[in-house]
Image (cartoon, rainbow, N blue to C red; front, side):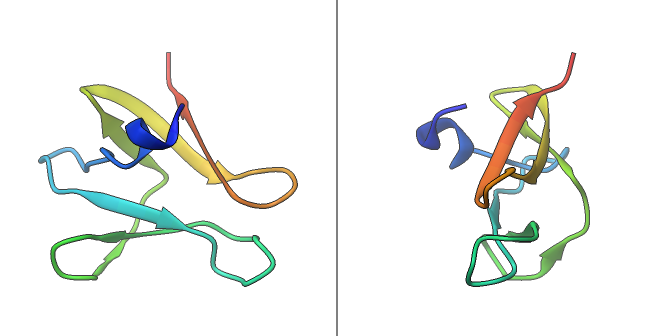
Length: 68
């Protein structure tokens, strides 16, 4: 998915989430709520109504893939 779409990630109730790497070298994956900074404890999100899986990319970074 493109960065523009990833920036629209929400939880099931529509609250916006941002995902990031835990370490400076691009490993680990964590999400937090944009409105209050609280941790998001999940590996799924919704983008334009499509359920997606969020994970650490192979060489670092974040990857978001639609679930079937």
